[in-house]
Image (cartoon, rainbow, N blue to C red):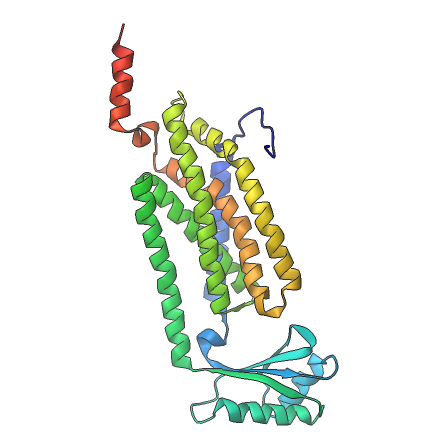
Length: 314
């Protein structure tokens, strides 16, 4: 049973110039934010100490920050973690001579001055060199994924579709990272994993659309490239909507009830699903059209010869 009963083809490609201008504007805004604000890298990339503490009553974050500032921890980042009684304190690196356990004990001692019920749940330390390695490896992971996708789509379909697919994925990655830069949200390994998941989601949608375009290029007796792409996008619209809506429902549940640990992960995926659906419809197809993809590029030579032979028959 189809979600929509479409009686006519939706003219997606009529808005391709407007959509490309809109995407270019968003990319420029994201790059501008990278240059001005940068990314708010978490301890996974910058290094430092994370201390999770528990309170017997709901914590007063303003009071916790004040107590820490009075005891030499003015740079501490304080936030609720999972519940109103759990607090996560993040501290920047303080030199190789200061061990995480010592720093954690000092922090707990400072908090106990205001509340004796404070207990330490856990403490984690990431060295700056480890953070730099993770940042470099994360960037290489995304670059390797894009290169492999370019090769696969070029081999599976046509090189113009490969360029369009990679352009769409680049668009999704830049905009998702731009969202975190503009809003100042923490960017850690969990967010990097979410971006890689967005690449996979967007690529799957792009492959489905590209496969339908190739099939219609061979079946539909129309020489208008834009019309064939519009027909293909219309035919895959039901599948796109069902996939996107069901994915969004799960991500909304994770965002609302998943807790602070995966809040950023759910945020990145929610935005990524929206922008990935948009890019698979407009960016990938529009780039392929701009590069001159045509019916002849996707019809095998054998099929062309058979068609010519049939046309030549009396």
